[in-house]
Length: 454
Image (cartoon, rainbow, N blue to C red; front, side, top):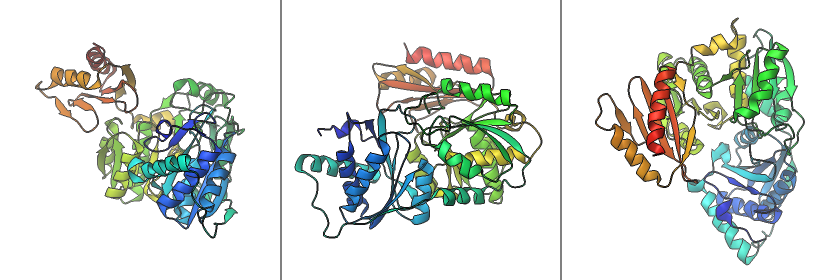
């Protein structure tokens, strides 16, 4: 096929429409390129429930095996289950998923042995260049001795590993509604939750990559509505929603109200610090709530602030030896999970915290939700740099105001802050604002938007 790889090879993964932008032929070339760039003798490959995933995954495995690499195929899995296999088997891995994207999309998330990320600066550029070359010249010569392809089940081992990290056996019984969005949570949750003191109310557990009920993207409030209604209707203690590949989890309390990912980050950080004797570094990106570094310090830890993006979080996790990291987008990273992100482990921490005391979730998380946030607000602009310069000019030199340029521009005072950062792929500026109360947040949000949209 003729393919423009610049359109589908992103900063951290491969993502595009099948078969318009890529197909099994290209998946095979990606497999061969992955084998060459990682220089591995063996790899592990898994896939989600999208209709195109099994074929693409097999083609990738064939491409790698033709280069002499032994391939362990774990079949249907969540992305964090693939990371588990990469870590436990100490093998590079490839996961076929387009996460929360619509049904016509598919993609590949790749990692080196131990679930270390593969991105633009860590191998993905070379993989793209090889695939482009072979698209023009034909597939590379096969190895004299092709690799083997072996099927292996990892779900039970993955579940056992997670349950060993968070002990839920002694919690009070809880009723939990889980919305899997027809994604991979429907595959992993029953095994992970088996034998625990939990009454599970499943929603949309049928694996269906056409997403017949709603998009598997809980970051969009429209996709949480069904769960928000179901939790109080069932008299449940909480609700959990997973995205399509089940590497992110979102939580709603007993009233159906969403719990912010920053509050979950703070809660899990406190628990991880307690597990580590009240010491350790916790990573958070610069648009998570101020609650997070406050809670980290209160519990004896050291907060480390990073740019937005999982590659930055994972790099800082590795560099600092941090025990945990969290993002506003509901990605949660654990040292005990090879620094990789796993929504399931975060969910188990929430269940353990809730079940370890008698109050409702709304009361438990109130201590981790101290400020009013705007959420992310996108504005289309003609000139990102000019608008950022206008914001700087409006605020620099004012009393009590601090500016920093870690990721876009952050303007802060003791009572409020906002960050404006440019999109890397679209002519957008993204605003996030937070303050001690709603009127103050609304005021500084609207001030910033007036300058951005002038």
